[in-house]
Length: 115
Image 1 (cartoon, rainbow, N blue to C red):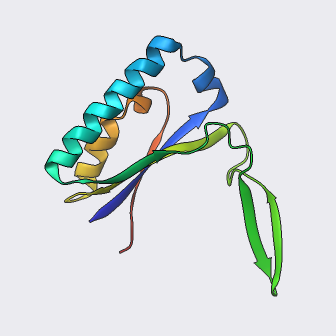
Image 2 (image 1 turned 90 degrees about the vertical axis):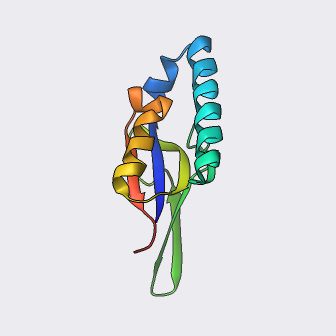
């Protein structure tokens, strides 16, 4: 089954990170990606713009398109990145989410892709 791990963040959380934190973050992601490739669970991952500037919300009503500034959820919280995985079940995907460096200070949403 495919699962999306959506990494949450906030400007406040990112501002608290120092250079050592960023280095540790990169190392942790590199090691996790390598492991997930070995297990065959890795599909892809990427960062989303750390500041959601430029995000756009699109809606349509009776054929008329409306757009507004994003991110989707207002306030200081936003999605900062994602992993797309192929795991046996949500328990395994959740165990992987708990290994993400960001899980120490930000929520990780785990959702099945498709049905």
